[in-house]
Figure 1 (cartoon, rainbow, N blue to C red):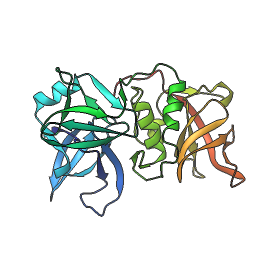
Figure 2 (figure 1 turned 180 degrees about the vertical axis):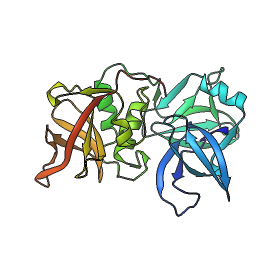
Figure 3 (figure 1 turned 45 degrees about the vertical axis):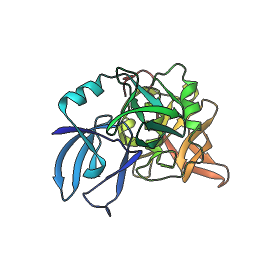
Figure 4 (figure 1 turned 180 degrees about the horizontal axis):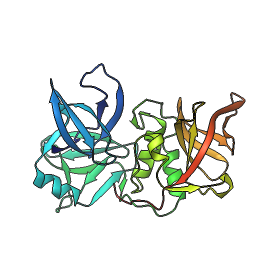
Length: 264
């Protein structure tokens, strides 16, 4: 198994080695992966961020030597916080990357990029560190109106657990990819009355499987991806959609992630 990196704005991760197979995840610029078997132009990858597996077009993954991988793993990094940011390099086309992308800082302060070194010429970025729990809610709110996309992790298409994961990534907190995996992490909060801004709520279906998640504001509402990233009311029963006049998701449990691994 060797290492690789995503040096494109978004790369599809599919369930099988085919353009017609289902989208299960997306890699963003700067995401590191381990690579495995190959099949007819496809390469199996395992994300270094969350151990999530899938298949990528091998032309969209830049392979790295063990030495380069080691340098990047221990490099300082920033995370893109605006919807998009632009990277430029003399003699190369500019590259637009999306919110949540990682920018690895080289020793000269420049950004590691495809074929050389880049500068951040437009857009916002910050060190992925949490200062106040309210910052999690502010970051989640920046995705409002983003369309729902199964497997998506960007402002241009995102699913419920992708939203939760990428918001916490921007605050230096590493959580798993799927809602049921995230529900096993962090600190269990017993009562909704004990919620603070940035806690994550999880919801189950009629079979008891956790199938949905969102970020609690601490003000009786939740930011979640359902059709689009939206704000709805929430209580101990679940999510109440005022336009539909009914509960749409049944609350199962609440977790707090602010005390777990601060590494992206």
